[in-house]
Length: 193
Image (cartoon, rainbow, N blue to C red; front, side):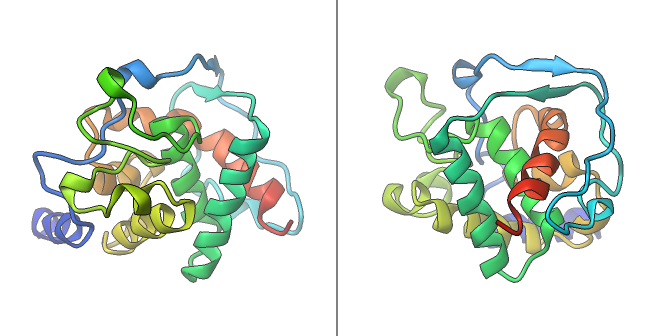
């Protein structure tokens, strides 16, 4: 039943099991792994228990964000709120975008591109995510990711990396987990700003 449900979720998201957004190894920016981080501190009235309800898995990575990357975080949060989803959904989305693009809204990268993957979530027009113009629009691409997440039965009860992987179908399914602490901190910092 779970496989059937997963296939349905993937179909709704416009993916094929053979395709999907896969982070290109050539896009991997340098990041600093850290030991398991302390729980996210409360910020701006956000209930931090909802941000990492399963704890974090494995070593955590962190990058310093530029103004553009921070604007993309805020855009993901705004789209999450507009979609009627909670802070945990924003954590999953931001962690996914950290892994896929380091929160940079990537256009076509020539030989460094993974197939035709573009945008924050490295979504592919050929897999039905939308046009290049759409998937490089922060609100559209986030909403498309969240629509895929909503279609995953029980995503709220899954570890972050499992929920993200069910939507993304990445060749590196465990890599999303390393961004959970930073994603939760960003949601705590910007959810109410």
